[in-house]
Length: 132
Image (cartoon, rainbow, N blue to C red; front, side, top):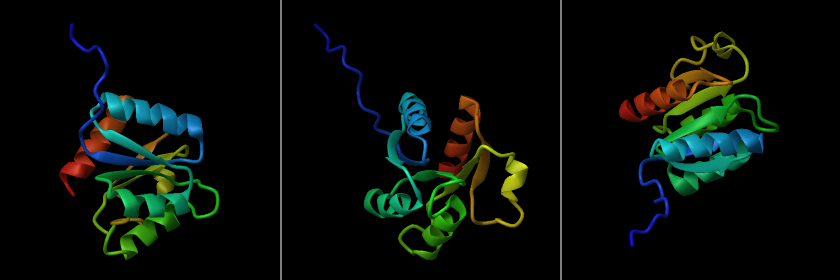
C-alpha cells in the first residue's frame, strides 16, 4: 500500500517576516503548496538572525513590525555581505504606492499589498528568486 503522507516541500526556502502569527501561518501554507520551504520570523531582529542561520532564497518582509521595522531590517540585511544578495519582497497592508519604491530602489526586489492574491505573491517570489 502506498504511503499517503504529504511530502515535505523541497524547493527554495522563503523566510516570512510578520508580527501576526495567523498571517505567517497562512503564508507558510501557501508557500508549501507552491513547493517552497517556509520559515518564519515574528519581528525584524528575528528576521536578521534567521536570515543568517537559514540562508533563505527570498524574504517576505512586512514593513510594519514592532521594534526593528521592515525597512530598517532590510537595510541591515543589505549592509551584511552574507545577506546582501537575498531578494526581499516588501509586504504591506498599505498601498504599495506608500512603500515609496522610488526612494527604496535597490532595497526591495518587489512590493506586494496585503491582503495579497496567491498568484500575485507567488509570481513576485518566483521573479525575485529568478533574478537574484
